[in-house]
Length: 246
Length: 246
DNA sequence: CGACGTGTTGAAGGAGCTCAATCTAAGTGG
DNA sequence: CCACTTAGATTGAGCTCCTTCAACACGTCG
Image 1 (tube, rainbow over the protein chains, first blue to last red):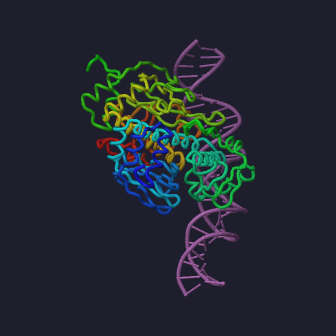
Image 2 (image 1 turned 135 degrees about the vertical axis):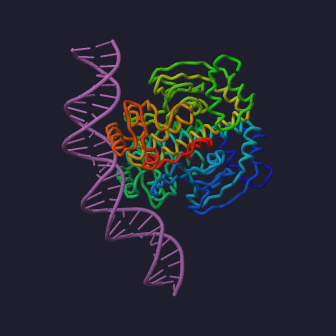
Image 3 (image 1 turned 90 degrees about the horizontal axis):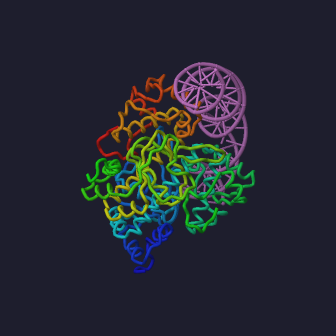
């Protein structure tokens, strides 16, 4: 490592999930020009409507994508954690069609679009890994379409709890059976296409069914197999490297 | 042109939407090895669960992506038309997490994954255009999440009619105000997360409101501005080249 | 002709929404 | 240290949009 604490290390770790990288690939990533920043909960990485020139790596904390519809309704489209390259989507397309915001306090690194594109084509392994990464994001979007379109409230919530736990575990940030879910019930509602009131009742039902227990924001899954069954959850769509089985 | 009728021409046309291509770029695409095939309505391009080795270009006709949930419920995730590279998603990830099927009779060209990746990195304009293409797909997925999560039936249906018309027009296949929508009400229901019965009633309401009229599968938009308003439709998320304004 | 896929309509039921009140925990300023 | 505020969680009651169940109409195709 050329520097003491490489800011972009989480990006290397994430991309290696998709494609083995050699020394040169890794160095190229770590040498990317970037600007570090810390945001408080609610702070914006990009705002819907902005024109964009930088991409953004999430270095620590949790963030989310959201889109405003019609009369002020919000839809949360994705949740992101350490290592996620959070704004390739908006930056390559030059025009943000949705916002990305901090859920917790987060550390981010802004990287100029040109630098990303340059590395992607000079180091094909890196480029391919980034391409994979956007495709996996797409796969998760598709699962969310199916979930919010065709599953009932109980199933949707169970599904989200499985996905979040498993992704946190895959990122080495938590145990799938016990983690902090840094979302208010309002935000859960916007992610699931429900009202906060109904989210509250549905959480209660998951508890009564003996599938989870919770205190404040922390979730403990007391019966993973049944939670996954209720949520119709299969981890295929996450395309995780073959180490974390369902 | 090296051959009489270049099978892969629609791919060139589509990618040029995202990025200007020079002679060499175009030739490289047209020279891609591929296998042509014709499928009847309902025929599979890929099946959920298959392992994949080829990508697929849609040369003519209309296709759709779908995912099966829990007890036989289906969710239609996207609709595709000429020029769409329909299976980068599954092929690069090597494992199909959803199916892609013909909606009408379609002509397709299967292209080996390696050839795609090879061209993408030897011709960066092509690679970037393909990357854009997958990002635009992602953008459309996000809009569908928001739509199926936060809009009511009338709005969802109006939104879908606007999107389909505009995309057909952008692909040079139809007029946004008058086109063939090759979907049964059952399929519309699966795309919108509704029941076919409710789709039927909602179509009727759109007619009664004077926004559309229809005979068989053909749709005529009688009031685009109001249809777009009801559907909360803005074409931003399609990232179309600056020629087709909303 | 009968069968099947698709579209259309009616009536009844339910999952989730809206409106509204109450409760808790965590600040914040005096 | 305590009033005061505020964001979030929780609970109740009534309503509605959409679903489910059930017929029936229409065209195509064996």
